[in-house]
Every structure is written in structure tokens, then in C-alpha cells.
Length: 308
Picture 1 (cartoon, rainbow, N blue to C red):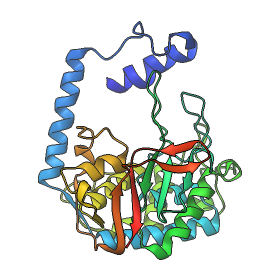
Picture 2: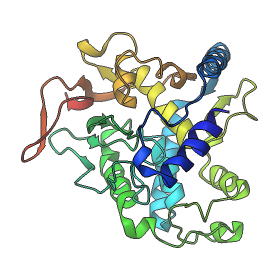
Picture 3: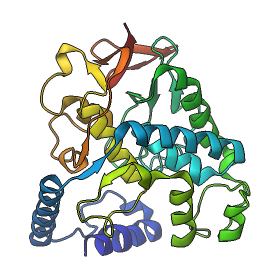
Picture 4: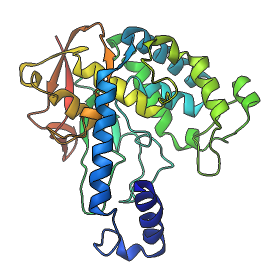
């Protein structure tokens, strides 16, 4: 019902009558149904917390690094995108130049995303989540790989933001993937079938890092959202040592996810049992003083890495 209101009815009205976008006249999910939805969501998250999926975090990171290298080598956009989601906390469309935000911004390296040279392993990003009437600004974020892999992360971000790579022909045939044929970003007209997607998950080996599904194997899909949750859990479990001002509540996870501090939206992400080995010689810090990224452009929120 929520999808019918949000993704179908309201979206169709906005497309047909763009002047009403953001208007209170556009129908929303009734409050009673919103309450039911929220209660249902909370109950499901509680079940995940009681019976978490147990993941070998160190192994998962190595698998994702290898998947990233192979995906870049063969120019398979969906594989690069999925692998990177286990190493950096991105939403599915954050790096997709085919996805035009509601404010008409198109992601581009050096404009909406870029590595921050003065803080290796740190990047700034403009989230794909943009809503009428709300301004979601750029914020600093970090990767959870060790320092020798920072150039690989930069290469992957540049690859995904390259319009030419995203616009490569997208195929939907399993045999083409098995042949490692280069593939662009998926679109409305070209969506990978479940067979191809599962072949990719098997090829990269993500499930090899799952120690215990705890009964969720049939209900949980390995996807970018799974990867985003995994990164948030690793950050929360201090894969990078916290500076003193981050050592409270879910603050580091809030900032990593780009959520409002103290947001209830963070809890659903912290559902996996991960115990990563802490990365040495680096400290996770909160952005308190503005970080200049260009002439007249600065970042005032998020997290960044400081070499120790």
C-alpha cells in the first residue's frame, strides 16, 4: 500500500502535473496506515536484531575488493556498483549518472563526488536522496578498506560516475555475463533477471562470508542495500577507531549513513553481527570545522579519516 501511494500514485501525479510536486494537495498514505506500516517495520527490525545474520566482516571486505577489481577490469557496471556498496556507504543511485535527482542534479566526479586529498580514504558526496522543499547537502564519508586500497576506491567511484561507462549497452542474457561481456548501468528498459543477479553474487562470492543466515537466507537479497547496511555495521563496530567525540550512541553510523543525528532511521541498518578487525594507523573523526574542497565550497558535516 505504501508503494502504491508513494511510488505509483504520487509519482504519476507529479509526472502528469509537475506544478503540484511538493503540494499538500497530492494524496499521502493515510495516517492510520502509516502507523501500521511503522509498527510492522519496527517489529521486523527487532526480529533481525534478535536473530542477526552473522558475517565474517574481514572476509566480506576482501571478497568485495576482489569483485571490484574484476568488475573494473571487465567493465561490468552492476558488478562494480554492488562490490563498492560493501566498501563505502552508498545508496543504489548515489553514483549513477543515469539517475537525475528531483532537483535536476546529475552526479559527476569533481562536482557531486570526489576524494578529499588532504584526508586519504575520505570522500565527499551529494546523496541521491533529494526531495522537494528539502536541501540535502554534500557531506564527508569514508571507506572501510585499509590504506593500500584507497586508489582502488577512487578508481571505482570515477568509473561509476563516468557517463560513458553507465551508457554502455546493458544486456539481460545470462550467457553474456558468463562471457564477462562489458555491461552498462541497468535502466527501466534493461533490468537484470534474478538468474543473472544470482550468478553475479555467486561469481563474486559474497555468500561465502556469511557465517550464519539465522533463517533469513530466503528473505534477504545480496544487493546494494545489504552492502550499505554492512558498511554501517562495520563503522558502528569501530572498524576504524573513533575519535572521542564519536564514541557515543549510534553517532558514527548516523553520519556514515547521512542521517539526521539520533534518527530512528539508523536502527534498521544495524542488524548484522559483524566483528571486523580494526584498521591500524587511522582515526575516524567527525567534521566539526568546515573542510574546504574547492574555492568557495566547503563541507560542514559527516566523518573523515585522519592518519595517525
